[in-house]
Each structure stands twice: as structure tokens, then as C-alpha cells.
Amino acid sequence: MDARDFIKVGMSAERLLTVTHDLTVQHVVPAMPAVYGTPMMILEMEMTSGDAITPHLPAGWVTVGTEVNIRHLAATPVGRVVRTTARVIEVERRVVRFEVEAFDGDRKIGDGRHGRGLVNVADFSARFGVV
Image 1: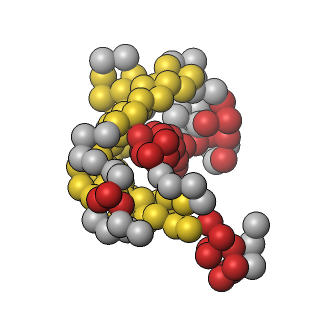
Image 2: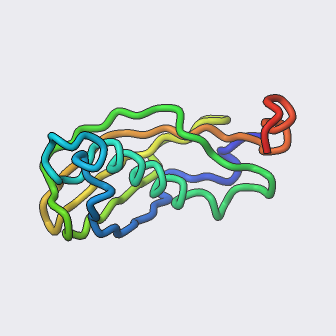
Image 3: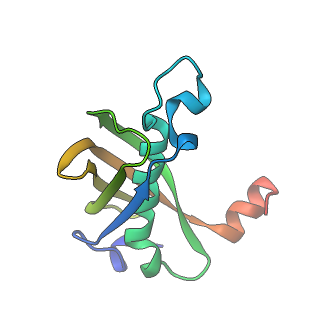
């Protein structure tokens, strides 16, 4: 399997998410402020990256996160809409790398790079005994 056969530089996706209390750092650490948590922002960046390429994957294949290099630049309170973007910037045989960004309105709240590895679900499941 060679991702270069079906994934191309420039493929992209965008997602919108309204910040709710369960997406804040306070939800996990009560003493912290009720603002969008960094782990939740990274998850949304990963999901957006997957959205950019999943429709192009062969049947039986998925991608999993393998690399994260993210900066969280600004706090976002509950109720705000966050827009996350991902764009393919590099494709190797089994790894796809993305430029990712997150915005609160026009204000950039996060950016960085993310990598995803191609996985054959049947082979993975057999190897690890998972469904």
C-alpha cells in the first residue's frame, strides 16, 4: 500500500465546533478556567486531518495519529465556535502529514503539524486481537 497513489498534497478539510463545558480544561481539572482545553483542540485537529483524506482511502483502511506538534495560542471560552482546518503537506508511503490550524472567529488559537499513519483494519485487528 502506497498512500502516494491516492492521497495528494493540498487535500483539505474544515470542521466547526461549539465549545461546551465538557471540552474545557475545567471539566477535567476543576481548579482551572473554563476554556477550551488543549487536548480537545488537538483531537479536533486530528479529526479534521482524517476528514481530509478518509474519503480517498481504499476499503478496509483507516488512518491513526502518529505525530503531533501543536501550539495552543489563545484561550477560547464556552459558547464560542472554533473552526479547525487541515491541509495535506507531505505524503510518504504509509504516512501523511498535515498543516493544522484552529480559529475563534478571525483569531488564530492554534496551529502546527500532525501526522497520520495508514493502517489495514483487518491486519491490525488480527495482530492485536481487537475489533
